[in-house]
Image (cartoon, rainbow, N blue to C red):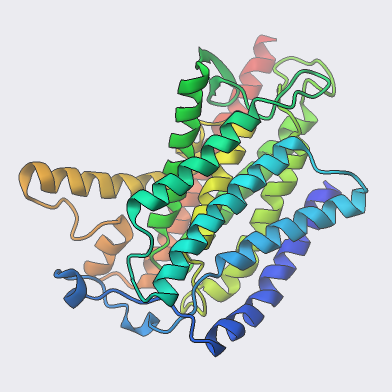
Length: 360
C-alpha cells in the first residue's frame, strides 16, 4: 500500500507543479491546437472560439508523471520493474508517441485533422501487436504470464483464442479504448476526470488481487494474475497524474491533453484490463467512454442508412452542448455517470469473489 501511495503522491506532484511550466513553455512558442468551427465543417458545432490559443500536448506531463511516480515507488522499495508493468507502460508510451505525431501535425502544420486515419490506425496496430506478442511470454515462477490467450471478464474464462485471433483481439481492445478516450476528450476536464475514476478502480482491483492472489496462498477463488501489486502501482501513477493535470485542465482549461494524452490513457486502460484479467469488465468500468463511442457509431450508421441523425451532434457530449447545457454541467454530470458505472464494475468484481468464496 505504501508503494501505491508514493506513486500517487509523486505523479500528483508532477501533474500539479510541472504542468504550469509546460504551459508556459508551449505558450512562449505559440504551440496551441487549432479549433474547428462551423464554417470549416459545413454544419453547426458548439462555439468553442474561446478555447482558441489554448496550449495542447498536455499528455506529455501525464505520461511523464506516471513514469516518474512508478519509478519513485520502485526506488523506495529498491526493486526492479515487473514484466506486466513494463508492458502496460509500453502501451501508454507507444500510443502517446502516435498521439504526439498527431498533435505535432495539428500544431506545427496547422492541419486540424492531424494524422490521416489510416496512419494513426497503423501506429496503434504496431504498438498493440508488439504488446500482444510479448504479453504471453515471460512466465514467472508460478507460470503466470502478463496476459493469457483466454478471454477474461473478472478472471479468465474457458474461451481460448489461437494466437492470431488473440493478437487481433488485443489490437481491437487497444484501438477501441484509445479511440474512445480520444472521442471523449472534447470538453474541458471530461476525459481526464473520467479516466481518473477508471484508474482508481484499477488501483483497487490490483491491490485486491494481490491480497488474494494464488501466488501468495492457495485460497478459494484466488487470482492467477502476474504482478498485481505492480499493476496497482502503474494505475496509481496514472491516477495521480490525471488528478494533477485536471487542476489545469478543468474549465476553463489552461491546457489540453491532446491526442498524446488521450491515446496514452486509453492504451493504459486496455493494458491494465488485459493484465488484470478484466477485459470484458472494462465495458462497465469504462462505461462512459463506451457510451460516447456508441453515440458516434449510432450517428454514422443512422445517417448512412436513413439519412437522419439521432443526435444533434456526436460524440454525445456535443449533443448536449447544442441542446444548451453549459459545458461545466455536462462535464460534472458525465463524471457522475462515469463514477456510477465504475462503481458498478467494481461491485461486479467484488461480488464474483464473494460468490466464489461461498461456493469454495
